[in-house]
Image 1 (cartoon, rainbow, N blue to C red):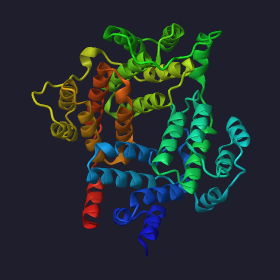
Image 2: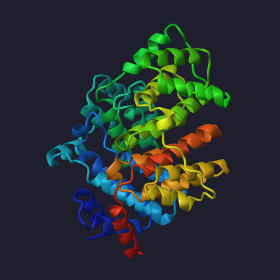
Image 3: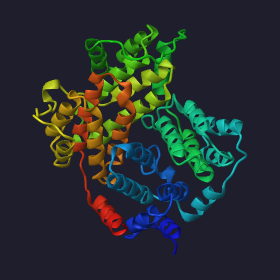
Length: 433
């Protein structure tokens, strides 16, 4: 059996030979690109997306995060992350075979008018089929889908993030036709599932008769200004929070300051997260990173982002874990503290590196630590959060950078699971050399 056939068989029916088949396929010319294309074409029709609603499984979504982190990782660490993320996707719940076959062959006319109609009438199966009629979806198509979902916060904003990530993933795979249609179809399918516009409608009432747009300009407030807004985001109730933020946006506050305040507040929420809420709370960074990448000007979107941050619990500052001061922080000591499940020490190493001007080094350490953890344990939230931090870092003032990276060091240290799958992948990759 050829390496390609063996790999596809493992995707269809995963076995103990999964990582060996991955290593063999990876070793072929263009192996990384092709094995990812094959995985997406094989798995998108087979995963039982409907059974997960209102949630979304993160196996395939996490692939974009792995590719985003590739420049920050050594070759073996990247290959390990890719292997275990694909294993997560391949072991998610499956549709019955007849249903999967029907999805695989469904194909519409490729009309945007029809696609928008199916999304608005909430017919996801027809939306997926219509998307298969597009000859070659491009980034603009994914972005157009994203605009159709930008006020829909069903499942805490997954629709906008999926449209953004799958469009980016398509580009990273060199825009293949068949795989692109599968990705576009999945994004369209999700866009057509039941919507939740509660926060957007609450924001619209406060912005009535205002034609204000949120300009994308760099942050210009001082630290007390950002801290005041972060306190509002953490401590106010939803009604008061939306009142106050709407007034700031109507006063032409720009996206840079708004994003900085949101990240500071999200970081505080992360520090307060219980162990069982670490992953869900970290999702906020994935949503904020999508805003940083898509740069919306609609103030309702920024208001619903504030509502998302506000959703998670806040503790008293004196009850919050604090960084342990360290004398000489390095990437290696950061990784060690995370893997040893020492949140305060991990935070101290992250803080020390940031304050010495090594923010990207913290990202490298967090990315490495995330590759040592089975993503199935935490729904790939670690990888998604670190990739989000990589997207956000250069959009933020240093104060917000530090808060985010320190909070994520605590998050990773406090949400460690099994590393067995990663070790299995390492053995297969070593044997395949």
